[in-house]
Length: 330
Ligand code: GLY
Image 1 (cartoon, rainbow, N blue to C red):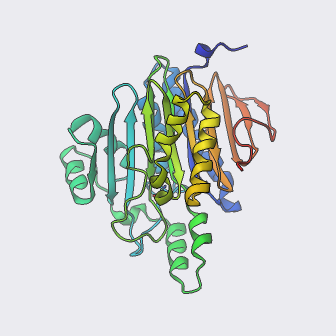
Image 2: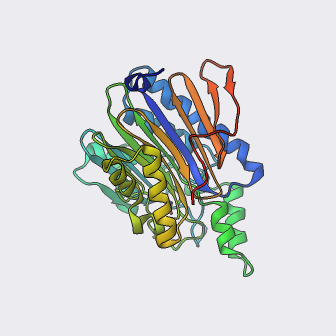
Image 3: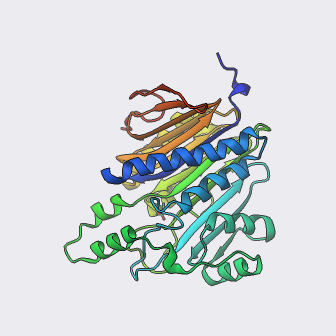
């Protein structure tokens, strides 16, 4: 039997809630598993939870399969505009960027905002100027556009497009939460936002308490889903409120998601941790790709009820449609 302290460290990542097309589901699962492994390697080597979530989310941003960094969805004009946030649970410091266009890894720029400025969020051209002053390499906005994101943008412009189906097909955002061996907690979330959004639209992701929140005294949450709904209920902070009231990490995540569904008809998903390293990956959407790494075991799933495990040493332990991560929400 594991004692609670033996459970640290842990990293949990998501690759976005929504409806992931069948032909992309394997890539999506492989992507979150590789991000969780990379984050865990940092934690296992004694690295910080902040470094672990940064590494995991950077890997997902670099993977064209996800709606963040390269592969971001396009706005109504066919352009990429990305949002990101990081938060440090020890200091409650945070950094965010919104509507950035020519940066490969917005999550790393968000960390620079936290570490090198006295502000919490920089946007658009101001964020680009700050990136230049920090020596962050610029990339061409076209290099962030994939054939797939261009195809979906064009399809959604068609007069007969079904906006709900189109949005659900690409609702994802990427994120991670972690607790390191010192008990420090961090979160990171990054997104291209909503498909065919208005130019200048800023979603939940860079908004503290909505796209993510981390507090060493309570836990951390990274969210994904319909940004306008997430902002209405400040989903990340709402879940942490339920944890403060004594709910388990899993029950608190379900309560927050159920409230968003019943109160504002919003669907989404979260990854959450508490200070002891207990974790949850929960969603009210059809799917959410997620993975967690803890005590030399990789956990992952995509559909409701799925929870596979694999030894981080290599050999599979079990493959089942089991328990913990996702029973249906009411
Ligand atoms: N949750 C991502 C967005 O709505 O922008």
